[in-house]
Length: 117
View 1: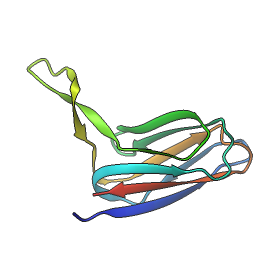
View 2: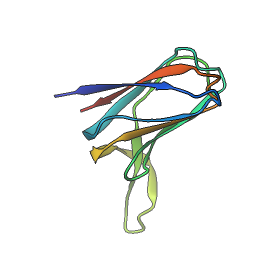
View 3: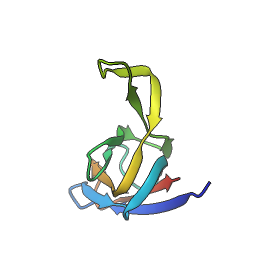
């Protein structure tokens, strides 16, 4: 299996906010890791695919390094309702990962690693 890692350093402004993007990617978003640097312990983020807005990871008041393996609920049956029992990988097709940071502190930074397979 081929995998590629994209490292995205995100420095917030004096107001504690920032938006950053990965390069264009194609493949399954296997994992996203946050490596704690000096963001305030009140840091929040919303990480999505830019073109579709599909949510990859939303979290609040992060105090330590973390990792997620994004998946989405599958639609099953003729009703199209999302199943709580079946999940599918999230795939990007020539899209960028968008990272929106709020409450990050004053002129602080953090690093995200996006692994695509």
